[in-house]
Amino acid sequence: MNYYDEDVISYIDPSITLNPFFEEWYLIVENILKNPEFQKRKLFMHHHNLSVWEHSILVSFKAYMVASYFNADKRICAIAGLLHDFYTQAWISTPEIEMLDDGKYAKALKKKKPWYKMHGFVHGADAAKNYVKYFPELENKKITNAIKRHMFPLTPIPPKYKEGFIITAIDKLNSVRELPSITYMSKKVVNKTYEVLFDKSHLL
View 1 (cartoon, rainbow, N blue to C red):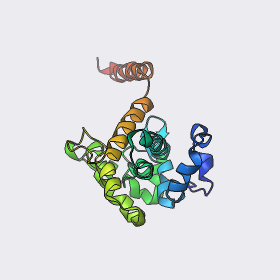
View 2 (cartoon, rainbow, N blue to C red; view 1 turned 30 degrees about the horizontal axis):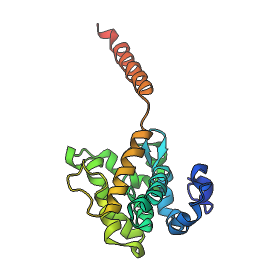
View 3 (cartoon, rainbow, N blue to C red; view 1 turned 90 degrees about the horizontal axis):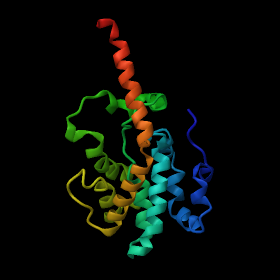
View 4 (cartoon, one colour; view 1 turned 90 degrees about the vertical axis):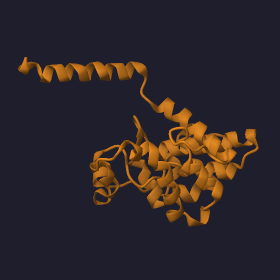
């Protein structure tokens, strides 16, 4: 399964690569983007048709751009934004995830969990540990806090630093934009309802 490519820029949306601030952002995050473990996030689905790789780059770059307006640390925002979803287990099943490293990243999909251990509640803390494992040289209290608490208010404790609030806000805005349109979702619901009724019609 081919997911790794040294030419990471070709996998980044042109709206970012053509931005005048791309080069200075890229200098901060280049080593993360070229890391083989991080590149596996091209195969992790985030919302709808966007991968964790794509979503993380959007959050990172936008957080980097916004940081100046709030007198926040741009480097912290770039790194925390890129690694905020660097969790260890996929939460959406795909054929690629089922095959990747003999199903290593799909194990959690096969386990029943109580609601408070579902992905939305635990992946921030998971990512906060995972980034230190693969990028120990980047460990920083602000980065760790921003990653760990980016799901606020779903997780009850808010970020401690303004960089964390920036990541949280931009993550929410991007996630909402990534969701399917109301028209798309309504069609899905209607189609699914029809399928259920049709499949069970022989019982009537």
